[in-house]
Image 1 (cartoon, rainbow, N blue to C red):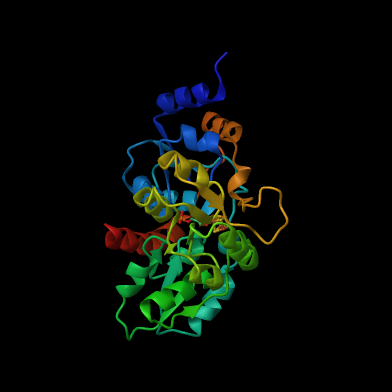
Image 2 (tube, rainbow, N blue to C red):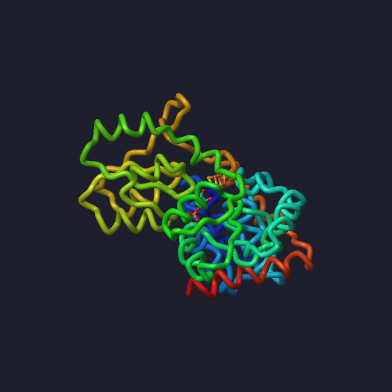
Length: 309
Ligand code: 13P
Ligand code: SF4
């Protein structure tokens, strides 16, 4: 009897499929994936793959980005319900009205948004390249940054800009408790706090390093002798610990009184190995993006990829 992973690997070969997974996916999915990465890394892989089918084990906006880049490939997701609170925080009609109030502004959108919102943007960014993308826009040009107010505030601080911010947030990163974090740090004073820029400013202010999931992993790899308190979704600890097996990694505590004291993204975690197997077997659920939206969303994504090379 073949196990699920063997069956997935066989289907992958038969169908010339590639499996892309985000660092927040469950361990079994990360283990079977061809590539595990952050939003930028996975978009870069999606833009160059020669597979016929892309199975995207992440959340909807990530798979949708892969489809925008690959109109002639089939892009599958294990579960169509894998959404994102940031993408949900920016309804299209409301954003259109907001944009219309500021016609001179360049629109920079964080990749965590729908294809329709990307289609209303001038350039997309991820947490890996947001600073670089914003810095590439002339200082005197006003900018709308959407949808993450926390990333926007952080980039304003880093670049000295005064971007107009959409009021969206990530439920997972806003769940970290600064009081509990400071208490934990007092118990581990030698540990360095590292944080994702979707976190609130009081968390970012006490962090030694702020960056994307891939950036955080690289940072601990560069400092394997230190110990770390990690303020992002707990799924990252799996790959991070594999990279630095002897380094102490402690998850940052959330406001909730949960038993593991760590934060999980419920959207990311709706994907399972079994759903991944079924989606590859049935070639469903499949991501479909209307062609007119896709074409308009492609340009700001391409601009980002060109600037990130
Ligand atoms: P990264 O691009 O840093 O992996 O972030 C994705 C995300 O959704 C963080 O919550
Ligand atoms: Fe969206 Fe936050 Fe989940 Fe990332 S962690 S997918 S930003 S809800």
